[in-house]
Length: 480
Image 1 (cartoon, one colour):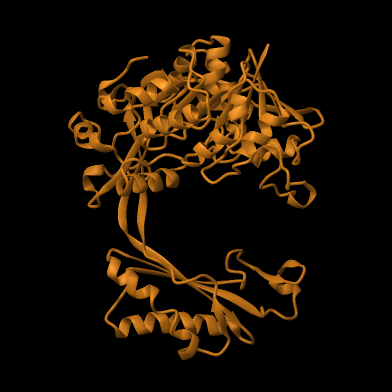
Image 2 (cartoon, rainbow, N blue to C red; image 1 turned 90 degrees about the vertical axis):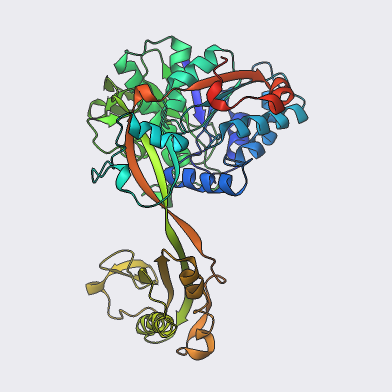
């Protein structure tokens, strides 16, 4: 007995066609859509501050439209997604509206929240939680910048509970990526929450498919030998032990083999002996990866121990403003010319009385992104292997960061005059005038699990819309 769990989104901005194409080509029990990263959470929090009805992955609504026919089938797949972002209730209500409009009003939608801690930080500190920075050990009380968002990484348990409550669509806020797969597996097989080897195995499967096409040949070192135009997105066939076969829809592009799976296996895991999730701590060193057939790779042998006592928290704070200017610089001595152009920008700012907190100068095309290498007609060569070491053009990028918005606004206005008052050979702008943007810095921390409670509410799409105007605050509800 297996459960087929697919993932057709690895981040906010992934292919909008992938979910429909996957469901058109394959039968799956659960479709997951993973939209969140630390930066994404900050962006969504910024959107919500500007417009309180936002703060979720609006791409998900387009996906719902595209898979409407699959959702209307009696044997429809269940959908599990963290598209709720920093405002899962708004996402639930927007999804409900789409489903009603599409003629499937009786689909049951579960909303899961409780991860947001932004308004609870003072209370958490008063309860003895320092919210210390994981790298520096500094307590949050020492931060002299305004916090913009704080979200705990919930685990798989509320997802499994929502599926037990017969939800067709589960929308969460911040949960650990692999938990999107672990929750359905636990619900399907009825595992205990202390069956750590099985939870670990399912977490490995979830980790492998969470980045979408990365495990099916995308972002591979073998990019020149993989058909990526119609790349297939991954499916994990998870068995009762938690072991999995990683595959993709038959006939789709990409490739699933031992290399593609291992490339994703070691992606962003930190300590391979102790990959910590809210559900289990995973030992990746025990995992066996073997090809079982064409585009089918068996992944077995994960071992698990209890999860950490704390939830990880993704906390962001406002840390000034930033912008970049870019110019194409062509001709002989273009690298030297580009550097002189950057000096002109900084010098003219100084004459205007503006000294920026931080400036970063790059000559893209001069090999600065890959130390020791330079571009050439046939790719990259080592410096000592080339006779001519000078590129014919570079893109000058000057990036600035400052606590003052007006200083950054002035910086963005210094590139345009260079077209007629700078060196010859400035071929034009790589982009138009850049606007200033807020900087969100990251403060990784933890919070005791007993200070965070997930809340679940399950209603049909029609019921969500009928009751939307009368809903009490999220923190007061736990109706499931």
